[in-house]
Length: 219
Image (cartoon, rainbow, N blue to C red):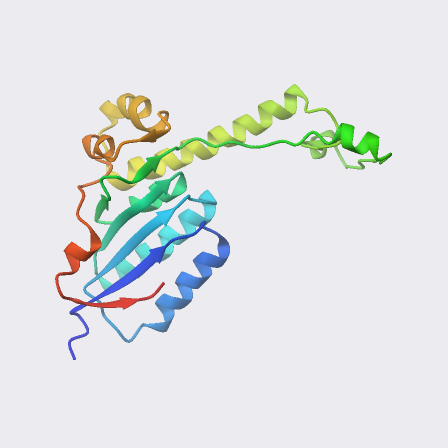
């Protein structure tokens, strides 16, 4: 049997979590007997933890480099936030022309429970070693300092995700401001905008690419 005439298929169709990363790692370890022709990474995800997305990217890229095989990434219906970063880790990146893509920003909900606590006569004490440990306490008023801290954390994550895409795709730095305006800070965008800026390579689907080759589904 020709083990090279085979494609490893990894499908990400949920939120990216530590459990998902562990599951992919176990799957790759399980099939070390095969030497596939390539890895097909299929993505249909709302994203998730940026750190876990980076861990997943490192895991898949390491397997690719060890076995000297390419990675082809395919976006299906939804590829937003950190999932878009994952889409860019391969040698080629494609999406469904009707996919929902983009939405690079981050949001942090805050629930003010002060009135609820008062109505139920809940008295709370917050003991901490320093003032910074009292951030985001839902039983106290959200201070301007807390707002600034949360906003900065989200901006840092957004910048790191953008940098991940820029490095993976080896994009031209001279046109970075255009991408910020048209992609990174533009919410949900049309896939043709990603193509215009070199973030994807086209609209080829996974089924078109395999052309009768054997597929080993890992996930």
